[in-house]
Image (tube, rainbow, N blue to C red):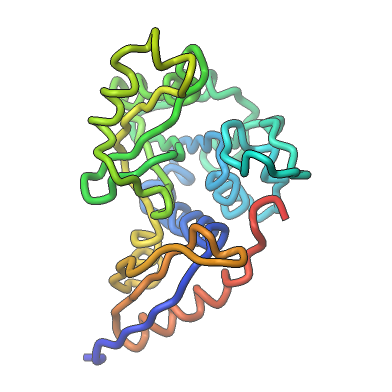
Length: 253
């Protein structure tokens, strides 16, 4: 039996998104749905990387994003218009469908992939900020997730861990909508199969992974430090994986 060894590294936000995207595509539920059912990739920044991993084609990622957070006074050249159609695959073949149409055609065991804005990792709860008056993407899909058995996967980086309890925060934010809604988005707690960097590393290499630090400078703001443990074979696979994603350009670069 191989002796356990350890390894640590830091990933920028864009590198983490690439890692999470690879992990999502490797999920057994996703692989099964690609073979036998439907996969729906809703719009979002991490989901743009997932589209690239599924299709093997580069994507104008800003055009796959609706809601976003950028510096208040930033002069960004990235076009965030959501103009690209969502990726819907039926038995691995792309089909042209709106989100409403895809959800209407989905069946038990099909997969919908929806990102998040907040995370309580230990509680297994994510949160979505909602600014659309009809509830946006999550409102479109959540009834079918519960009613039909649509498998919701939530890819979200550990950078989105928040200090408060998402359910308690949602209650406070949403309790008096006539007061809060004009000044802030709603916060919608969601549950599903949460995939962070930790799950991606386990899926792709077999290593046990933990986050041991966060933050950075000079483009590494929002970065996370990870420690991994595994056999020599697993650590070799992990090193090769990490080397392949280091240097991932910042989103929109």
